[in-house]
Each structure stands twice: as structure tokens, then as C-alpha cells.
Image (tube, rainbow, N blue to C red):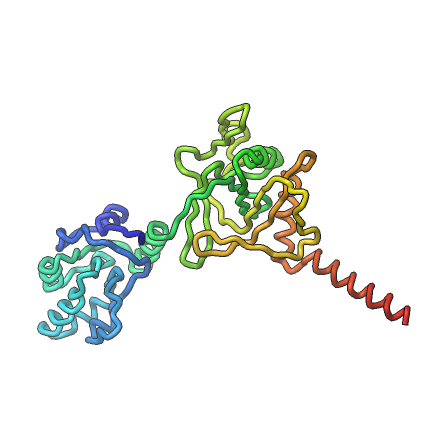
Length: 313
């Protein structure tokens, strides 16, 4: 189900002044893009994105006020014609044309005003709507920041995710969320994870109970959110399964609508998972910088085999 934001939430968030159309504050906003209707005020409505919040700044109002009275009313009626137009916002505390107030009241489209500059208000509203309307998901796992890499550790219950996170925190890395990770996908398909408010900064260790990481290890041991760039899946070691030993196989997993690199780490007694995850984070960073140890090894191996064949010939 698509997310929606009521116009009333926008009013409360940014302290907007309601000039008319108060009955329409229950209207919903479904997209995070805003629109400055310059061409529309000139009379061209062919591709007007009426589903967006309409923002009029100094330039738009200056042009609008130059029009004859009949044209001003006609343009404003067309601007408010669509039933899905959320609202109209006037910036810089500018005077609002009388016909705009009247038509907004007739069509029940809120006409709002802010004292902020147009670009500043547009940027802030866009950021607010992106956060509110972004697709979200909650995943069972642990999110940690290891050497600047946001690593989502997943696996079956009891596999050792929280214990691994505790060891990573002791080694100087930071915890974002344990048990439940709330993930938000931004408009550029980046995934950002955070912890639910109820369990923020908390870590559950079986046999010990719930601990507060910030209280025990300090503020430097936690973060409130982090972009997820690598998923580490812990699974019980299966003797018959063939695991990637070189690192040439690049797996991905899909979260919401984004594919994220995946590393599968088999778990069995004697393996230091915290150290392995640290190395996985450093290796991931090296790959992003253009160095791939596995690829370099296979290239050298191929060259060596080719030289041996030539010697035999």
C-alpha cells in the first residue's frame, strides 16, 4: 500500500499559515516532488503535474500579478481544477492574490504561506516527504558500522548475530540496531537502517539479558542510522555444501527494490566471526576502490599456468 502524508502534517511540521481551504487539510500527498507552476501561469497546462505540492515564489507571483484580472482568475481556476492537487504554498511571506484565496476556499484546496525563501522551503519539504513516503521494511537482524561499512548481519535465531555484534562493539565498531532493523529506501535506491525507538541502543545476549550499549561502552559505540552497503548472512556449517573459497562469486540479495551485495559466512566452533566480518568489511572497501585480491590471484594463476605450458612446448 502506497504511503501518504496529509497536508495538515505539512502545516504542523513547517508552521505554515492557512489562508483558505482549511477543509482540504485532510488532502493527501503521495509524491515527494514539488512543482513551481511557471508555464501554467502563462497558460500552458498540457503536462501539469497536479499531484505535486504547488509552490509559488517571488518570480511566479510577480508574473501572475502582471496578468489581466480575467486571466488571473482563469489560470488559478485551472491550477485548482484537479481533485488530487494537495495544496498551494506561497513563500517569502508574500501577499496572496485575492482570487487565489477565493478559489482555494471554493475548491477546498489549502492555500498556505511561509516566511521562508522558496529554495530553502522546497529543500526542507522535499527532505521531509522523502522520509515520510519512502518504502520501508523491517528485517530480523543486526546492523553495525564496521570501518565505515554499514553491515546488515542476518541469519536464523540463535546463530550468534547479537554475540558477534557485541564482540564488534568491544573492538571499537558501532551498533545501530539489534534484533529488528527498520529499513528505508530513498529515491536514489539507497537503503538506510535504524532501530525502533523502543529497542534503540539495546543488545540482547542470551544468558546475560538485555544490555544498553551506550551506557556500557559510551556514545562512541552507537549510531542512530547507517546506510546499508553489505549484507552478511550467517548460516550453520553444512559439510556437503560447497562454499566460495576464492571470493569470485558475487552474490546479491534484494531488500525492498534494491540489490545489495551478500556475503555468506558459515558458522562452526572455532571460527572468530567478528574478525571475519572485519576482514569482509575491509575487503569490501578495497573492492570499491578497485582492488580485487581474488581476481588478481586468478589472473596470476592463469599467467603461471600459461608460462608452464609454454615451457613444456
